[in-house]
Length: 277
Image (cartoon, rainbow, N blue to C red; front, side):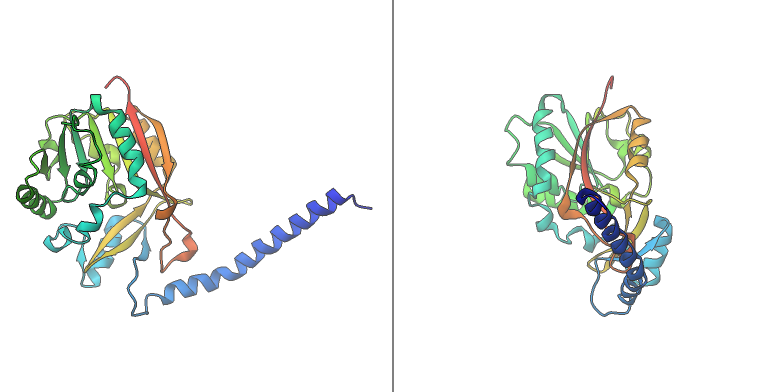
């Protein structure tokens, strides 16, 4: 005779095996449904799964679409929405306020037209007098400079080469990493010296290895990378950066519409510090 505890364990085991078998049997159906979305007339946020940015960009160009962010019309795409403070911005705001006395210049990489500067302007204390430098592609930098001048934002400046930033204590990458086609360490090495503080937000990860998809933005398709978290953090550790804080952004988990079998991404944020900098 089996004890009740044994029966309970056996029942759980059989149920788990049955669900796993059901999941495997439904996998071809999920794959087929995903691929059929290529044929639907409805717009998809994420399309395709590629092994590299280059492969994804070639696929996007084959669609006759704009590729990437370096286009004048992309500069104003969803601009007002990006200037809003979202729930996942508050960890970044917390660390900016905490580190206020240590920040002289902040480099906002992939900062668009200064959207985070605009979002945070009234939420940082008046004594937050540090310089805010946005680094982005030339078309967006040109549009950002014109808009900042028109709006009288004197402490907001723009560069399309990180080498042109004299020095910076703090590096902000909010929504940058998905669109960066090189390791973050390679980008940081373009600065004259590595910044002590890294604030990274909305970093897309995926279990099972990295994959690049295409994200739609207006008429453009943007290569979008879901990274491997361990490899990402190891790359930064090689430069002496240690994780001080990590947060998960459940609202920004995504599934590739045409490849649902690859599973959802996970979005996370980090504060990392480089001691001795």
